[in-house]
Length: 474
Image (cartoon, rainbow, N blue to C red; front, top):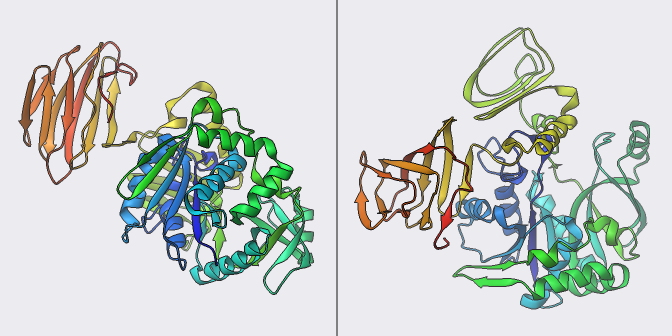
């Protein structure tokens, strides 16, 4: 059988899971109870399939550093990694098409792509592997294969797949795709036994996929080809990066592969499966995975509860006290707090959308921000000052830079720092510091073998991140 390349789609805003999921660190990076992220779980699930020799990830280029960080923790076998980096979101049709063209270029047109959203949870690895095996056989025979989840309840939040005629012991033709139904229709689907939840996972052989795109969606195929042809490709020791050009990619149709191709192609098949699957689409979906106390509460972190029933409390870093309440969602992060009626968890997206319209940073950023060299966290800020905690990885370095409107005071908390401050270069050890006036060129590097942890105190009339002149890139 032809080579299998898992293709992980790692993007999206995950607005229903605000404030933990945000644009610059969306749902795939959320940590579950075992401290693995959804992205890491997807990586491990795919890498454990028979015959997988590399992993392809399609993500926004600003999420590359976070993605690499997550993979670094779980890629124990040093599986080669390919990245396709999007300059903006254009939905799944063009993302999957670019991935197929890239796989054709690198691995051959009979390569099979196993397309997996990065933010789903699957508990039964054996059932998943069996479903993939069935899908691969159908893909080899010329089908575009999707995976349908046997419904467990009358769910109005998912799309459905209606089964057509049976192809073999494990697969069916797709009669039609159905939008999210109302409650009565969803119950009828559950009772009828001919409808499956649409999981948004696909197994696609490159040559068959591209021929169907040429027939049904030539504009998407053309935009993907143009983007890939003009991409910038970088080769690393164990990874390759393909950075798509913004001016071309942004013109691609913004449409899901379901609408662009699967609903119009006659070659679509579905593999019904029971995987212990969840798309973690809301706080309600997440709380269903967790055990409850005797009062129906799920609690993460330290709390004091009195006469509290059926509440979800996620507050890992701060003590929470609740009194005389029921059916609430309470989600606490260092810079934002969500309190919501538990029955309206799907509506949390409206808060995130309002923040986006206001241009508020809490839509896009957490207080801790990932960068290629490490992380920084805004500890406190006010008029004319900002305090950051900076962590620089061993061997990493910030760019040589300068600020017009702010000065900075660096204090080493742990580790060793190599500092460029104007014309001087020197080392700073734990508890040592340096002052960098506005207008001075400066650079911070970690020459050691442990993390460099620093406190940075900024002062000045303008402290936004765009007051920066970079003299080289990192």
